[in-house]
Length: 91
Image (cartoon, rainbow, N blue to C red; front, side):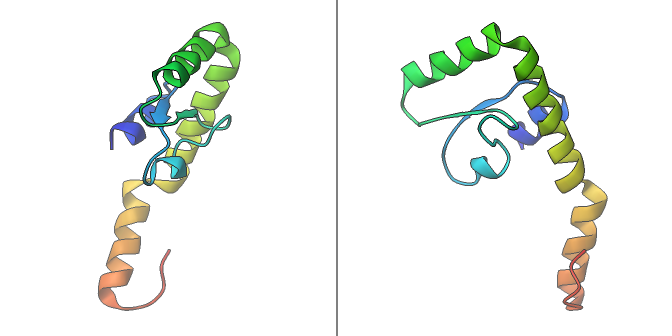
């Protein structure tokens, strides 16, 4: 949820490449991913954001668009309701 909130806020986002995170943070598209337990990679990603404010803002904009498109409350509630109703029609 924290990553969804960061993206929705339009912030440049850096996260570790674990679990479902790459579904939200797409390297070079919606943010930066670093391997877990790699402080040098994390430092490099932070440095990249600082040194490349224009591209970092563009990634943040695309991240916000991703959240607005794929993680809207109304859409997710409709999908969940369809599953519970057994209609098989997922929005």
